[in-house]
Every structure is written in structure tokens, then in C-alpha cells.
Image (cartoon, rainbow, N blue to C red):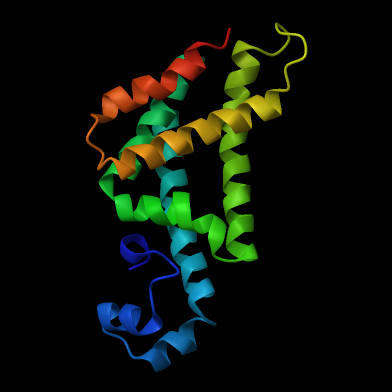
Length: 173
């Protein structure tokens, strides 16, 4: 429901009807819609983390290959369920301070992966580069490409989307 209608448009009544549960059960399980959204968002993040870690364990230990693997996992995850992408990439920043903090922590976690890439490709070679800012920018690039792609109905083939995002990573030397 959150992914189809958005957090602010979804209602407890609709969610309960979809889940075939009573509103009483909802309120016994969650303090409110914010808490339910936080649980849904946490589940989405956990699944993305699991898939990313699993794919990276099997990828060649070369910076560009690792970046390409992580990007492919991310964009395939988005394409599989654009509603899930709306939860993770759009609504998470506008629900509550708790969910915004979860989103920020997730972005920092992925920026940590990107920072490893930045350090392998750039650090020590370019004076005045802030690896943390550059890593955060790469994550922002990935998110904005994903949002534009979802809004376009994921019409561009995933391999082309991966290659498009990878251009920024390849440009680091």
C-alpha cells in the first residue's frame, strides 16, 4: 500500500483491508502508521543489504567489478518491485525523524562501500578530494538514477542503467 499510494495517502483502514486484519490488531502491533512504515522500510533495507553482501562475496576483487556488481544488485532490486523502490527511495525521507534517521544510516552504510571504491581509485592521487563527500555523491547519483528510471517505468534495460551509473565510477582515477 505504501509503495502503490505513498505513505501520506495510505490509511490504516486500507492497509488492514489489504492484509485482512482488523484495525484493533493493527494498533496492538504498531503504535501508528510511522511505526508500520519503519518496519516495512527496515525489511526492504535488510533484503537489499543481504543481496548486496551475497553478490559482493562472489564478485571479482577488483574495484570496478565490485562497483558494477553492487550497482546491478541495486538496480535489479529496484526493477523487481517499483513499489518497494518508492518506499526506500522516495517516502523514507518524509515519514518521520525515526525513518529519516534509518535512511541516513543506510545511505552512510552504502557510502562506506563507495568510499572503499573511491579510496582504491582516487585517494592519495588527487589533492583536495574529500573521499566521504565523493562517496556520498556517488550514492546520491545511484538513487537519483533509480528514481528517474522508476518514474519512466523501468523501460531502459537494467544493463544499460548499470553502465550509465558506472560511467561516474569509471571516471575516477
